[in-house]
Structure formats: C-alpha cells, structure tokens
Image 1 (cartoon, one colour):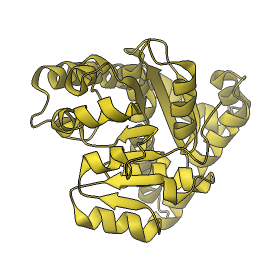
Image 2: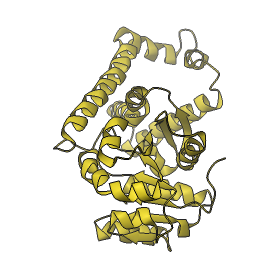
Image 3: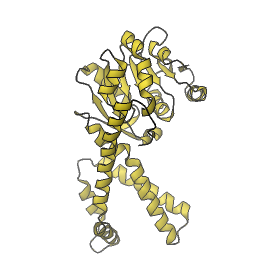
Image 4: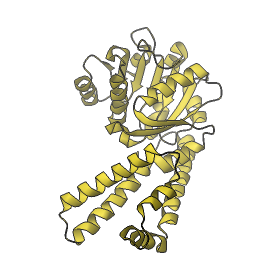
Length: 294
C-alpha cells in the first residue's frame, strides 16, 4: 500500500526542495487540494500558489498539521537544519493530536534528536534527497525508526518516490551519512568535474558554450547508460569505452597516475564524516550558525 490521492500531506517550509517534492507529487497525480504548505515568508507561499494553484498555504505551522481539522497523514519537515529544533518543538502538540508520519529532509538531524524535540514517539522517517530533484532527477536514501509500521514506511517511500528517480531504504541511520557523501554532495562532485573539463576545452581553443554543452551532455549520457545497466560493474562500462592505446586510455592513465580514484573516494569519506559531525553538533546545540549547504 502506497500513497492514496485522498491522503493529506503537509509541508513545513516552502523553499526550493519543498517545491520540488510538491511538483513530483502533483506530476504523479496527487491533488493540490490535499497538499498544505506552511512557511513564514509570504513570498515563498506566493511562489507555491503560483506554481500549484489551489494548494493550501498558511504562515502557521500548526495549521498545516491540523489541515483544516482533518489532520495531515504525512508531515514533511523541509526546513534548514539550524532552525529545525524550534520548528519541531512548536509542532509537538499538533503532532501528538493528529499523529502523522513525520518525514524530515533536514540534513544531519538525527531521529533521536527529532523525537526528543517533537515528543510523544512520533513515526519518524529521515530522508536524504539531493538537488537534482529540482529537475525531476533526484536520488534519495531513507531511514525509518524501528517502531514505524510497514504501512507508514510505504507511505513515506511513495512520497519520496514521486520526486526521486532512485530511492533506497537503509537499515542503519548512520548510513544516511554515507548517502550524504555519495548522492547528497555528489552533484557538486560532477559539477566540479564539468568545470574542469570545460576549462580544459576552452584552453584548447573551444568556445565556452560548446565546451559546456558537450561536457554536460556527456555527463547526462554516461549517467543514463549506467542506470540502464545497473547490473554491470562501472569498471566494465569504463573499459568498454577504452580502446588499447587510444585516446580514452591516455586520459584514464593520467587520472590513474595522479590518484584520481582515491581522491574521489577520499572526498566521499570526508563528506560522510562531516555529515556525522554535523549530526552531533545539531543534536547538542539544536540550532546555531551552521550553514545550510552540504
């Protein structure tokens, strides 16, 4: 059992990621009449109304959870990590009354801390999405507290699947830090590589717009090939493009000589470790001056 069109979903936060999630739900056929956004900034609410005419909006978070007295089935916390403590504490009574499945996309904020702030042992699911959700190409990792029922897990997964092309459950919360290191921060790694490829081509005389288009499409094409052949080891896909003594082999040799594979692995490990550190900081402080970028 997944998401039914009659089920009510409330979003706390109406920023870009929330709007990407809402867009996925609407594209999947979920009626805007069963979607509610609470957000303190009227500009963000106006943007939601313009994109999704008929969606319910309010500046009061509790109004979204109450959903005109009917109660939300799913509550999505789509706010910045450094403000989520206050938001969660303010929702405590409403969550206790309406008992929604609580889905948090706040990076680094652990279930034990969310439960402490919200209280009443809510059904908690943490989700680590990534920014390609903004163009309907997202990837997400999910973790559910042990007491979350299968029906509740199916409901949370269905919401995430609406805006994620690939979504996976992990059985240990710490693995969400690895999800962060791989797919949460991953888009920046690819943009970094695109930046280098583009600049190299420009130095070799190619117009920048041509270099950018070729590099970006190559990234997209390689990704689609990998997705179409998930059962195939990426090393095999790489070898299939690499002819002996050819151009690709020359490029790969430079990467190998400079330790590019280890550098990438180290980057994933560093991002994973930082996600763990931020979880500890957020849990201890609940708020603070931590930036909202991964």
